[in-house]
Image (tube, rainbow, N blue to C red; front, side):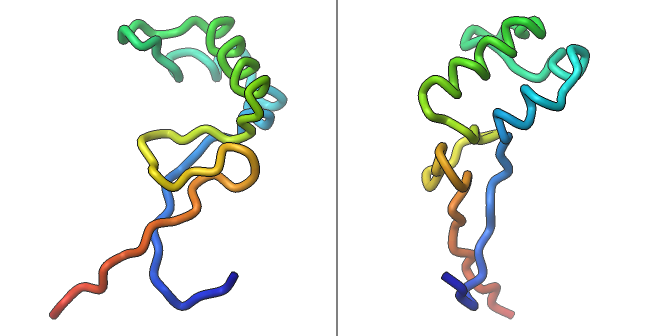
Length: 84
């Protein structure tokens, strides 16, 4: 749907793309456990495989309340026009 409404979009990660194209060193320091510890590259790869097993082709880089894990990622958020 094409619209003239201004929207902002959150960044996301293509899970399959990362698993296919990233080298081991690219996974270093990219992800953290819930307790704040940094994941090893093998732990990070395992987590991405787990996301795929849940049907999550995309994961958000941050919090997003309008996110489609399967096909699109962030679906966008309206931007309020600035008053002059």
